Image (cartoon, rainbow, N blue to C red; front, side):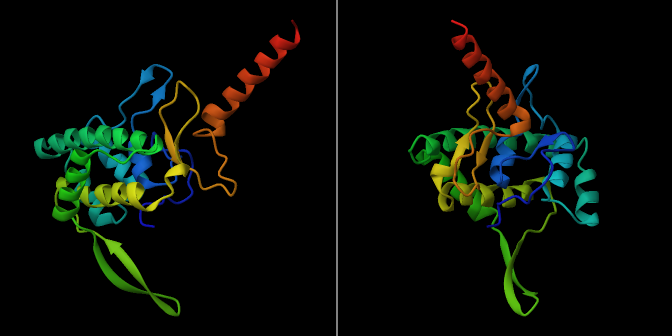
Length: 211
């Protein structure tokens, strides 16, 4: 699946990667940290760092192009559009987690993006057989819609919805795709919320035992 993220450190260049899917890692660019909700994509410079950290932009040529967008009005306007889409995607994911399909308006918006910014496909040799390679041509900020829209569509239509979840911590808004064998993952990360919740549960048991 094109949107499934590769294994990586949880934090890369100041961004959280625990979603196991590109669309969820994108959704998680506004986590709740110690000082409350924090926007990790406030401008084009931040978007540049996330595109590199996520692996969307990897070649030297594309990195140089994205770097040239810093301070560009077009790029800054695109970031605001992207952030707005992210929040509408959040609503769609929450609906999916609640057993509902995304709203018609969001489906129509996503279909428009998929039509206007389609993924391109080519054949590529992989050892002794041919495989399909998906790619997109990066020329302007709007071209970033291609991998984002494709990943969002894949998330909402091709993955097991029962394994798309929000972290069980009430103070966390991070979502993830559970790829564990038993499908029992509960937290965004053991390091972030898992240990804290386990300690809190232990302390509650201790208090109840002292009564």
